[in-house]
Structures are given as structure tokens and as C-alpha cells.
Amino acid sequence: MYILGVNSFHGDSSACLVKDGRLVAAAEEERFRRLKHWAGFPAEAIRYCLTSEKIGLGAVTHVAVNSDGLAGFWPKLRYVISGVAGLPLLVEKIKIRQRRQGLRERLQNTFPGEELRAKIHRVEHHLAHMASSFYVSPFDEAVTVSVDGFGDFTSTCWGIANGRHIHIDGRVRFPHSLGVFYQAMTQYLGFPHYGDEYKVMGLASYGKPTYLDHMRELISLNGDGTFLLNLRYFRHQTHEIGYQWVDQEPRVSRLYSEELTSLLGPARREKDAIGGRHEAIASSVQAAYEEAFFNLLNCVQSKYALRRLALAGGCAMNSVANGKIKSKTQFQDIYVQSAAGDAGGAIGAAFAVWHRVKEKDVPFVMDHAYWGPVFSDEYINELLEQGNNRLSAERCGFEIIECEDRLCHRVLESILEGKVVGWFQGRMEWGPRALGNRSILCDPRRSDIKELLNKKIKRRESFRPFAPSIVREAVKDWFEVDDDVPFMMKVYPVRAEKRAQIPAVTHVDGSGRLQTVDKHTNPRFYRLIELFAVKTGIPILLNTSFNENEPIVCTPEEALDCFLRTKMDMLVLGNHVVFRT
Ligand SMILES: [Fe+2]
Image (cartoon, rainbow, N blue to C red; front, side, top):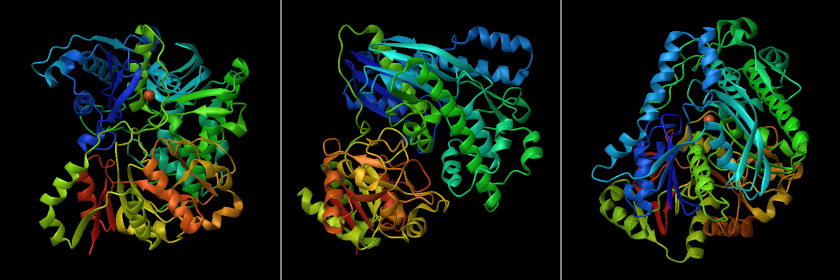
């Protein structure tokens, strides 16, 4: 039985395929369209999923979508009748719903000549978020929480999950939302693009939360774990907030009101320099988010008295807050999958349907993120042979190294010389993080590497940290925890005595957004780090995403283009090493 999961007409549109209860393919549409966070109908991601299994649309038994226009109908109606919402906002919401309703036609038009026999299921947005974590987690029973911007008129949802059931116990509905709070403050701090919240999270470490009282004016917390936005400071509840989800990078108009500038002073413009006030506000935003997040988690934890948490939703991408869950709550096992945000809704919807229709239990745990396209060495060889003239013109050459250890040693030499290496292997990662298959790798010991990487490739803000990939067994020696973090979803403190050894991956506050690398799920990447440890005593490599201000590369062609137009020193495509002569 094939279930096609879809997140469409929403940020990070995506698709996945579940076969007989196991995930077999998943990808975000942005990788194919080459526009970050692309929103619309994910035709290319669907095409990839079907092609990877060598099936046509007719073989799909069920289609699952992570949105249900009928969910929250009564609260929505009450809101409309109250007259708070302006007419343009309502018209926009109706249009979005109509687009989502046309799924069968869009599928049929994308695959002409193939008959779609599948039943289409609509899964409420937050049920899909919760399902995207719990059903692929290693847990039989857990508390499950979704913290988000908005979906189906709800921002936050929690409940208990057991076996095949997810029981939703409570919600925070529109217009109150931690995601909107964080996004509004991200805009205020001069980062206008959809998905820029991680920049505020990085900047927060440079300041002290001296504006926390101001933030408490924006969000008030309740004893039951819920929260309220002070709507004086926001405008999403009354205006046509242009969340534009149609075949483009999502665009969001201003979420905060003029009152916010009266409270905090003028907003930063995108080109303005970042000063101490911005760092302090960023720190206060993060602190206020954490207050609300832990208030919620502590309330639900004490209610259910369970120590396992399956977390999802856009705010579950806040890896700094996630890293504090163990110390700030009684939760001790926390699962967050690699696409915790809306892209993940595709697998949540698919697994929610699987658990409704299945005839037998099938064990499945998502313990790695490698669900995207893969390219054979023959394909790569042909590409390089065909592009040989171009390579020569750029003073580049390539060689094939079949032996894995020899290949790793060749790469290692470059890394030890302070070179920047593009590392393209196996299946593309699912979710926004490069996890060793579409990565750029460097020596974590070099204090000048951030500057070097930004000069050579990334050109990104100087306050953003680079991440350490560490072999799983060594985590406790280098970090103040011993935990699995396969998807870079938790930030933990680097041990104080180790920080000076890995300055390139230690953030200004002494933390690191680590990826734990497992021998079984990515043996080649594990071997490379292991060999680096033999040479240096440090079982860690700097790992940043393989891209240059664009979505992470998907194909070898894109990797080669990125290599040639930047100053990357070496490119490894499977067993092929491309080097500059
Ligand atoms: Fe969402």
C-alpha cells in the first residue's frame, strides 16, 4: 500500500511516500524549484517520490494532506462574525482553501494519462504535525506537542499519543501564536524573509535579555500552559497578512503594529548595522519564547506524568530551546524529526492515514534523514566527463577513488590543510539541515574558519554559528550531555575545557548545534570523522550546508556549479574527487 503525503500551498511545500507503513522517500519542493521555502503545489517532489519507487500515480492507494479546511470551522466562524477580521483577510483565506481543494485535479494534470484512483484524506494541520513526530519516533507512548505559526486556525496543540492513537487534549487558537510572536520580532529586527527566525536565535547569544519585561508586555502566560498575545502590538488578526503560498518563495507582510515601535524604538532596516540594542532584543525574544515554551511543556508534563516528548511544528526548529528541555522540565527523552516544520506535515499526514487504515502493525523509526534523490557514480562520471572542458578551463581536474578509506584520507589531507570541501554523497537530506550528504566540511580547530567560509562561499551574517558533526560515542566527552541528536535539532553546551580546541564550531555562548553521526546510518561520513579523530584527537568536523544563498544543492550538477562559482577547494561527488590544480 502506497500513501502519498503532501504539504501544499504552505511554506516548505513537500511530498513523501509511505509504503506498507515505512517511509521510502521524502523531499521538499524548494530543492527542485531552487527557491527557498517554496510554497505551492509540490509537483516535482511528488514526481521524485513516485519515480524513486518506479511507480505511477495509479499505484497510490491514499493521498494524505496536512490541512483540513473544515477543522476549526466553528471558532473560525465565530471569529468572522465578531467582525475583527477585515474583508481582504477573509477573501485570502477562502482563496487558499479553494486552491487546496483542487488537489485531485492538480495531481491529474501533473500526471496526464495516469488515473488517480486513490482516496484523498485531509488531516488537520496540528494532528499532522504531532503525527510527523510521534509515529516515526521510537516511542510507544509519549506526550506530543505542536508549537507553530498557524495551521487550520490553531497555533499550538498538545495531547497524549499511545500505540496508534493521538489524542488531542488542548489547543491555542488564532490569533495567539508563539510562531507569529517570533516571526514578528524577526521582522522587527530587520530579517524580512520567511524562515529567518534562526538568525534571531543565533543573534540572541550575543546579548542579555534586558528587554524581557517588554516582551512580557507582548505575551502573557496562563497557569494552564497557554498564552495570549497582546494584540495591540500585532496586525495579523485584522489585516490581510500576505502569506502568499502560490508557486513562489512565501512572502509575509508586516506582522507587528506601530505600537511595537512605540514600545521598543525604531525597527531595524535590513541594511542597518546590528548594534547592542538589537542583540539585547534578540536575546529577550528568545528568553520570552522559552518562558512560554517551558510553561507549556511543564504544564503538559505534570498532567500526563510521562517523560517522553514527541515535538513538532515550526517552533520545534528552535534548537536552542529544545536543548534546554531536559534541564527545564521533567521530559528526558525528546524526539524531533529533521523536518519538524510544515514540510514534515507531509509525513505526518501520511502516517496518520496509515495508522487509520493499516491491517497490521509495522515497526518504523525515522533514525536518519536520507530520504531524497540519489545519483549513481556512473551518472556522476558521465557528468564530469562531459564537463571536462569546463573543468580544464577552470583549472580543475578529477579522479575516481573506489576505496573508501583512500577516498577519506584524500579528503582528510585537504581538511587538515585548512581547505573547504564540498561533500556530496548518497541520498539528499529531508529537512533544512545538511547532515553529511549535501555538506561543506572544514577543520573545526581553526579560529579563522568562519571568516574564511564566509569569504569563500557563504557570505552570511557574521553572528551565525557553524555546526559540529561528532561521532555518537564521543558526545559525552565534548558536550555536557550524552544524547542522540541526529538531526541537529538541539543545541547543547560544549564542555568548558574543550571549547578552545574547537573554536570554529563553538558559538559565542559556549554552545554547539551538534549533529551526532551514527556508524550505521551514515558509515562513510562516520569513517571520515573517525579518521580525522585519529589524526587530531578530535572526533568532530565542521559541517555547513552545501549551498550559496540558495536551497541546499540536490543534484551533482548543482554541486558542481556551486563548486565552480565559489572558491571551494575540493568537491567530492560519491567516489569522484574534483580538485583545483
Ligand atoms: Fe505548521
